[in-house]
Amino acid sequence: MTTTPTAPRRPPTRGLLDPRLLIGVGVVGALLVVSLLTGEYDVVGASDGGEMFAITRVPRTIALVLAGAAMSMCGLVMQLLTQNRFVEPTTTGTTEWAGLGLLGVMVVFPGAGIAARMGGAVLAAFIGTMVFFAFLRRVSLKSSLIVPIVGIMFGAVVGSVSTFVALQTDMLQNLGIWFAGSFTSVLRGQYEALWIVAAIVVVVFIVADRFTVAGLGEEIATNVGLNYDRVILLGTGLIAIATGVVTVVVGNLPFLGLIVPNVVSMFRGDDLRSNLPWVCLLGIAIVTLCDLIGRTIIAPFEVPVSLILGVVGAVVFIALLLRQRRHG
Amino acid sequence: MITLRDVRKSYEDEVTIGPVDLQIPTGGITALVGPNGAGKSTLLTMIGRLLGMDDGAIEIAGYDVASTASKDLARIVSILRQENHFITRLTVRQLVGFGRFPYSKGRLTQHCEDTISKAIDFLELTELEHRYLDQLSGGQRQRAYVAMVLCQETDHVLLDEPLNNLDMKHSVQMMRHLKRAATELDRTIIVVLHDINFAGRYADHICAVKDGRVVEFGTPATIMTDEVLTRVFDTEVQVIDGPNGALAVYY
Image (cartoon, rainbow over all chains, first blue to last red; front, side, top):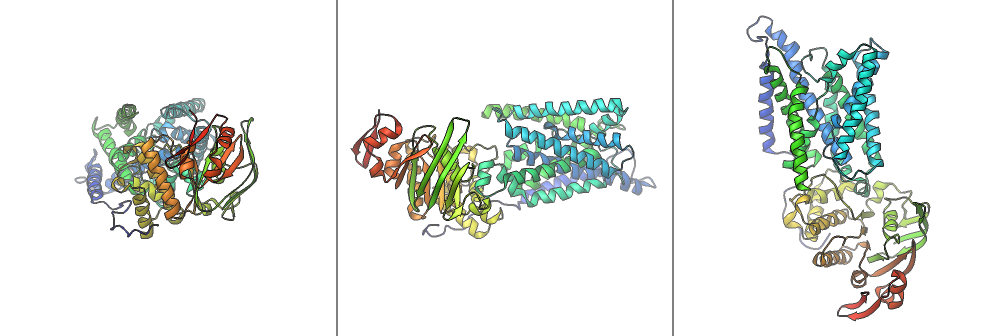
């Protein structure tokens, strides 16, 4: 560019490999081992302990990893695409739409398999999220806080429709179980579809920079030659698939996508590609920790992880609001 | 060279732009000046393909803006709007790095890294490169955005009121950086300016816009006269000789 001699080599723009990441992996690994060893059944002593371990503990722990990573990543992508810190699948109605889709499939095709149920959930989540995004682009809201409020209202309306349909079709109890996200029923043979979200994480990692650029706004994104609409569509599709699959297998995991990206952003900024490993790790850590609390707090019974997450998430959400207020 | 042919745009019923026929020569700084609501920014955004036009054609270096793929245009022209609010927390270096997106799609090569460093040094942001944007002052942040569009290495750079919200010192600094970018880096810079005296001092060409049309185009010497400025701005303007050339006095 200029004739000045090139400056000495500087640290690169983004460091992907960070030794601290290894520490994070270690901590999360330890949590997962604890998760594998926690439970009422004596997997070491009992004669069929090994089999029980493979049927319940391993699937449950894998599900924690996949769901935790997927939901926190969804939150981050949504926050970039909407340029709003308070947006995530449970504050935009995406989860409620997925629930409605799931219910719809159950009502229309009572015997539908897990693939059909997921298809319904993903499709409904996609439509609902697109409607919400279209609304956000049409009206420019003065305060960023209005967005999650509108989203939560939007979700509540969709949730009421689900409740009404469930009442009419005698499925209220099923609905309650789905919405209370829980890893209790994650067993071998029922959770495998969650591996789809692992593929979503990989895709997001590959196209991460597009999402970060889209997060700079439509004008800057267009300036550097990005097809903004296509990226929004792609992002919404990926979010819908991940949310739909997690909702069907696990249920509602409130606030996870809100807490994790905000905490990571405080320490590491928002470069999606270099943050993604951190976002996934923290998501796994929080969901595993909450699940462990849920499993031990009233042992031998369990409380749904969504309950613990809701309490933790609400506290963090309010802390974020207060922090945002202080910073203007 | 940027050519506008019979460009028209109408929106919100009463606001209409055009017909505009204009040739902006290659090299140097061209300042778009005019009263509020004259359509300067709208013209600039149409040249930078952020806004479509109703009629007419715009060509940049022979490429038709409407029909050339956006990702190809991103290597020919870059545009910076005046309001850049985003919640994304990025460091200066990460932001500037996204200027390389048209070439690297995010996977920065060593050449990209060198270009990023040069753009940062050029705008004297070297010390701040690892700071987050929200930790910078308004003037520093504005420089970071300009570094990003310079890092895009396009021959044509469009800036919409880059002096907005800058104090005297930072405004002068910014205009000097732009002047250097035009001369040392051979960029053609088109900039919307509010203060006619900045245009008179730093621009090579001034394009006066009024009521959606280009009413004057010429060198500062031909535009900086009592008659032209009074007519363009609808205000009594007197041009006097200052230490560094003509000065418009209107208060």
